[in-house]
Length: 376
Picture 1 (cartoon, rainbow, N blue to C red):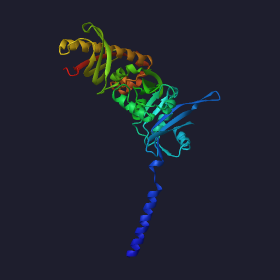
Picture 2: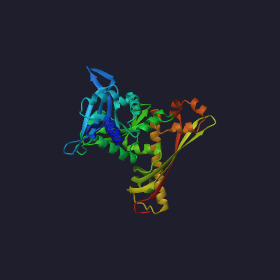
Picture 3: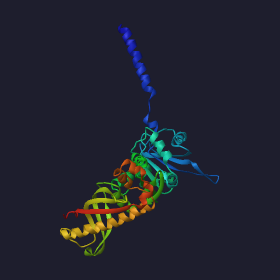
């Protein structure tokens, strides 16, 4: 009996080893794609190739000297999966997407529409919902493949840049999950960071505005923080603004930091069923810098500065909303507030795309300066 038991144990052990060997994946043999880029395929024979894409990929790689570098691949394909198969024939590594951090879209492709790519990313169970989406002002693949002397791994550099600036509210944090949610939800349009290629660095170029899955306009980088103030709450950010007030000596450059922003949208209807939308915004922060000679320990002087801030921000907000209405993009989610204040039947009977550009939108902005550096 003991001999049969030993033989049986030996067979079981061999079987377990064989099962383990069938799914071996050696780390050094895998190519973990970090960032991908999508563009309209270049012309062939003088004709545009709108049905195919130029797709690029960047993968981190370690040399025998244990030095971190990267491998870049490009191909022409109709889908992401076709591109992966073709790229697999260009490298000795087995390409996997479980570590994919970013997707870049060239402006030409983004203007045409990116729904096919988004659906492909969503169907891939290995792709994280936190994947960062960005639009590149130009050709995305050129930006991804370019080497920057101060940033040898371009894909990692872009990922960290987006992470840092997203926390500072200079660009929207456009994850795959949020982009798709805004794309599918009624009353709001998706947005994404806009990048461009500089001589020595990757540069932020503002906010890309979408109508559906198509890129249609941009908010310039100097106005991105005001877009963030109108789009929702946040707890970190800086704001530099030129304010005007007679008591402060005319035009003054004022900078606030450690911003805490709270936004609420109030919807009212007249007897004629005309909509009035009011943004209620409360901004709290510390005064970092100002070039006026004022005593902030004096309540009256501080209130004058806060009022000047409120006036300047209101003017910026009015200009931005007018720009969005002119371009017929509800990137701030005003339609969501209208929908939530309406009955189901009332919302469904409302042609929001037609009503939105004509809607009366107002602002009630309150600025509270907590302190001025070391001076309370």
